[in-house]
Image (tube, rainbow, N blue to C red; front, side, top):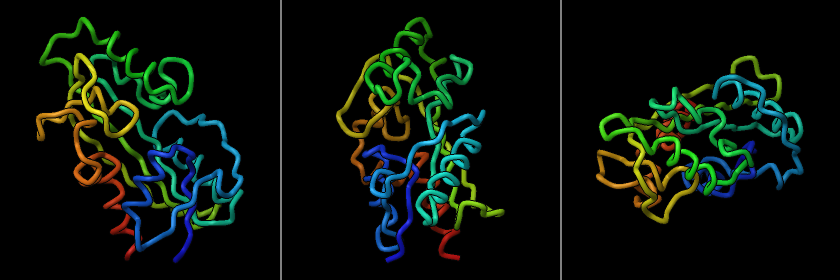
Length: 195
């Protein structure tokens, strides 16, 4: 099976990508290939995903996939946005990040708590690929007032999914992977890769 590098060391993302690309690609992480991270200096999810994909491909010599995703909260003028992983200061501190959103949203009334997870996925055949595949998808929901559920990672415990009447963290991984921003983006990417 063809190997592809995912420009991430996030174990949750690697699990999701491996589950969804099973039978098409074997997904390896940056740490598997000793790839060093690159600063995410883009101003959009797409720019950051491109930066990460080109870096991973250049260092590994493999085709690369990168996603840049986060949560966009309307009442917070789109924050945390591209800063979702480091919203509270330390990169990857899920608990601190969710608590900061809950604090920042504490005075926002019901009916004005709309948010969406956003995902930009980029695929490059090689580091200088002039025609990368770029897919963007969103997942609409609302910010809860307190955490619920134990599944998922990141902001999943405070993201309410109206279509299923529960938090993202209360959904099974199988259901989440079919309806989430990343799930929908990956499905679209798979369709492109199979062409």
